[in-house]
Length: 464
Image 1 (spheres, rainbow, N blue to C red):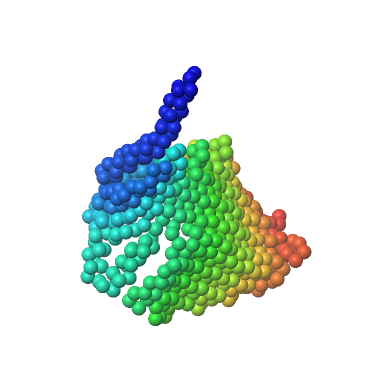
Image 2 (cartoon, rainbow, N blue to C red):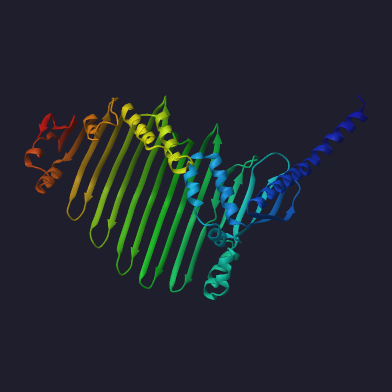
């Protein structure tokens, strides 16, 4: 092949590469135009105010609510389409009258910037800030100089703003609220807002949404001449995986939380040193399993009536044995009862309940307190581990509901510190003979309590 041909081919390749940003930019423009038409049909007005850049494009735009009812219904329809379980929630939001919601939100306007690469498919960055309040509020502010002097400067500074990242296929990847540090004074009161690192991150893999919701700091306060409210949250993280209602998991941690309320009637303080929690729902071969574990440290509730303090609390739950297909039918029939146009017979729900009972269920519950103190009671160390079980059975709706008690087996292990036993015995919660049934175990007493077929026993001895 001649050098001329190589030169021509090279020139074509270079020209194609050079033109790529133009083609990508035009494709983005056509997508924006298509979305603009869709939005206009559903209560929004979108305008591209400016565009700049070649290898990457930056577009300034505005987004205004022109018909709040249409906008609400459009957004809720998108939510329900992807998550059918929110149908009840969506319908409850649609109960607001058309006139009411339009008056409340028409004219709400945002301004923003969108940045994307024109070379290769990549994430799209979008910044959005509140630019204009609804028309009804604008009219009120026009007649209220004090309020407008407070609110309008906040809008001008873009205080209420969010940064978002979308994937190349327009799925939300992460969302970060702008940090806020503001002191707002109005009508004899002062509002303080101090927030940092508030974010939501989402990633979908194989039909499972993996997400992180985080708050580095969220301090809110309102003070006046005879009133004080302070809420302080630090280091909140929620990690979650969600596939559907019967397959999801999450864990939460809180570094610290404090709440204080003071007025002429109330003097309350609540402190939480830390919280860690894990929960999951899983369909394991048609067996619905629900698990949850909680650990709380240094809890204090202080008010004029009593001071309650707790060094540590543990709680756990493990439920299994429910047939997942039966549970899905219960959910479907319940939704039909509330939402369906065709009435559903009560007998259907009764049959669903009986089917759950017939299949049986087993629940483990655990609860432990360390260092609990209040005006009437102080406990060093108490724990309760309980198992409730209904074995597979032939119960039917013709039988008395009391027959369910005969199906229920309960076993419980109560571990009580010797000093706590002494206090509880002095309080006369039960007879001294019952307390005497405890088995010594170091500094503790153990009570193994069982209820089978309605009969109760403690450490093997039947209680009359």
